[in-house]
Image 1: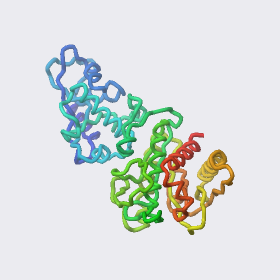
Image 2 (image 1 turned 90 degrees about the horizontal axis):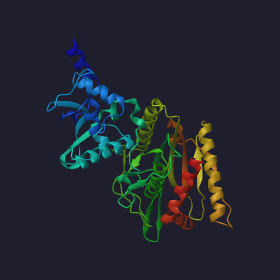
Image 3 (image 1 turned 30 degrees about the vertical axis):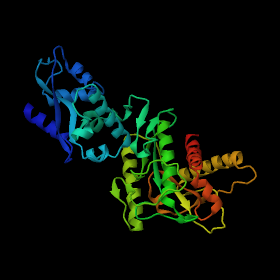
Length: 383
């Protein structure tokens, strides 16, 4: 009967994932107890790792370990797919993937494994990351994060504060994939809305992490990262949640909204109270129309309207400081956009400039201005 219960317990926490292989085994050394052994592999916290160790090895907490005997530890071994940790384990929680990456690097540094997960195509995933409720509270032990999506020159993110700790943000750069959005021209160069919206979105995404938030880039381009050039080449290789972006407009919108909503429900169940979605765009109007940054919200959401007004107030203050002599005319508008109506967290849409207007070009072509736009949005969210 005891063996049957053990087998049932083992299968109940085995993932339905083709990349999952087995639990890792190690040899007990002289003087090892369960806690000593697990501590060597950074598994002594949380407690569920210890409980899982006893289950996997059919041990009683009072049992002693035998020197030289192999024991199963709560490390789940996956076949790394060569793309990303998130797609390997089937979980698109970016912070969790960073913790797993850091864990594998630490274990390699301690020479507890011979090769990196990228070289060996073998990924170690601590049991608590997938099966313990308290795993979300376990922070990366170092003060910097490595986020490759930000690009080679910006991938190291320094944690500056915890002002946004416990809050989740979904940053949705407009358009992407087969849809460049609005298209303008600077002399003979094409300006694609999705590229400039993505660069500002990525800058905001980085700053959110810097202040302790958990943030998601809903649209991703692994080749781009944060760029400082004025002319950002148009391309079509952006993806949503690791998937190709559809050609059909409604399907594109449904895909990104679904990605946000799935993550929202997950975090809501985990007890997260404050979740926000920002959709970032560049407008297209007549060439003679100068357009200040403006904000849209869904009429049925008071929290979204409140956020849009707060952000408008922040931008009005910043315009007075940096653009003396020209009044800020950015508005707050109620719009029935699909991404505002269908997303579950409070959501606003930000229009950065008119891509057809030569004066407005300065706001998006200068990297310092793109950084300022992201920073002002961050200040609104932190206030």
